[in-house]
Every structure is written in C-alpha cells, then in structure tokens.
Image (cartoon, rainbow, N blue to C red; front, side):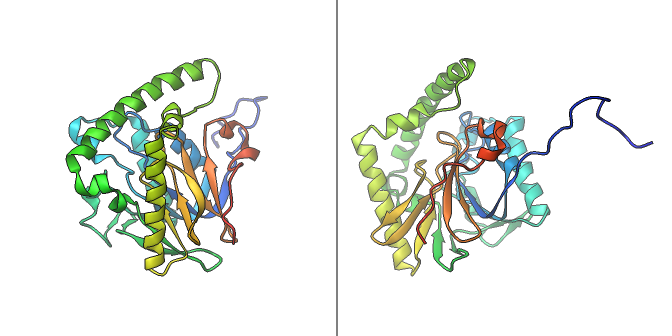
Length: 278
C-alpha cells in the first residue's frame, strides 16, 4: 500500500515557488551570533536556486563563537541546506571574511563539496569579469587596529540586540522585519563617509586587477551601483537587511530583499531587484 499523507478532502499542499538564477551571492550571515536571521535565510534558500552560489564571507561568526557558544537548530539548517545544494550539483564557493578567517589557510580545499577560495574572478553571462572578495582587506580598522575592531564589534552587538527586541514588537503587531540599526547607521555622517571610501577602494582594486566590477560584502550595506566606471555590488547581510544578489541568465544583477512576507506571496519573490546596466 502506498503512503497517503493527505486526508480525504484536504487541500493539496503547493510546492514552494522557486526562482531560478544563474548565480546567487550571499554574505555576512554571522551564524553563531544571536542576531543572525537564519530562519529567514533558510526560507530564502527554499524559494531561490542557482547553478552557482558564492558565499562572500562572514558566513560563520568565529569571533562570537570564541566568546560564547551559540548554535541553534536554525543555524545548522542553513549549513545543511547549503551542503544539500552542493550534493545536488550546485557549485558552492566560500570566500572567507574576517569573522570566518579560520578558513583562510585552506584555499583550494573542499569541505562537503564547498570550495574555499580567498578571492575569485567571476565571469557573468554577458562576459563581464567581477572580482569577488569579502572586503575586510580594505577596512583600515580591521587591518590596522584589531583591538578597536573587537570593541566596535561589541558595540555592534548591543545595537543589534536592540534591533531584535524592536522587531519582536513589530512582528507581534503584524509588521514585517525592518532594520532599525541599519537605518540608524545610514543617518550617521561618519558611517556614510566610510561606506563611500570603502566602495571607492574596492572598485579601485577591481580596476587594478583588470576587472569590470567587484562583488563584496563586509559593511552590511547592500548596493548595486558604479564607481568611476567600475560596477560596485555589495551583497548586504543576513543580520540587518536580509539581502542577496542574483545574476539573471542575461548577466544583469538584481538586489533581492527577503523579509519573510515574500514567501507568502510567491509571485513577488525577488521583486524589487535593481539591475546593473549591461
């Protein structure tokens, strides 16, 4: 007898809407941090697929895990989802950042089918070449003042803790996720100035390496734009903004924001993306 999980007369369970991309880029998930939006990321991966997935650094937060261990089931679900994608034939490339720098001594190694690279040059479907790197190499604070970076990390933790409580109240009132900390950051003049300098430095490095653009993470500020004729793409994060970058079959890129409500409206998955001009 064949199993029949559905009761007679019960509605059919619809398969999740899955939007297909040529390539997906994710960064700054910070698994191991209490602020990681792991449940939203699992939901995103359920509704999006690609032939190649780039993990552009700070996927696992080694800094926080060294301070105190935090690894709930949802964080494990993210890892299992990515490993399953790799087993099914998706190429998964992991480019470590400063928070998961423990992987940097292993370029070229494969872990469960996931390939580790320090940087990569990615060729889009339209032939453009993009330097893919996390970006902390161009963060002066991280490079030259390690203690200050750690202190800043603790302050960031406090801001994110406020953000978690804020969004708990929003959810109880029926509102979707919204990043208070991200909004506040963009209101601070020094932060805006730093973002601009970071973008210019990364675009300059891409140009120096003979690339048409750069795809990076690190500063938790998703963007698709141009700096001095060089395409600048930042994947954002899964702590504040819950964003990813998708490459369409024609080689254009879109910024995907995933709030959880999109899952309830399958036709809207990936809506609101902004394409890079070809």
